[in-house]
Image (cartoon, rainbow, N blue to C red; front, side, top):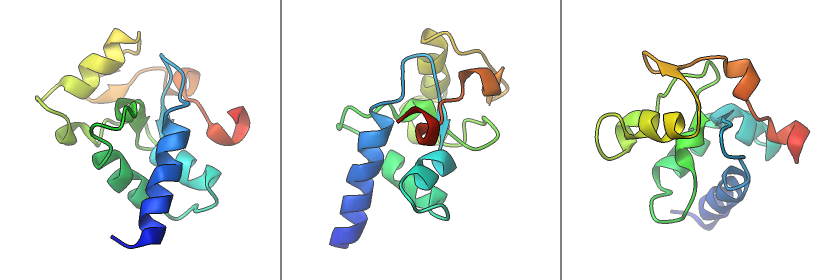
Length: 109
């Protein structure tokens, strides 16, 4: 990977590490916060590559609150189980009360 891509991933990880327990954010919200509004997919690639980096990737979902990254976790339901262990209700891969648990780095950091 190019150096700039690696730097972007590191910046994504730094934001993701600050998502509070029991809250979620979206790929697009992280991209927007980093000044790369059209790079939500790159944030997703970063989350996919975050294994072993102590990044709470399970707290990053799509803009509608869907667990679109769940297939990157070991086991079929690990992402949902991790969220539910933090008190977040998930039904049919959809976070319930998404607006209530949503954490926007642009407003919070």
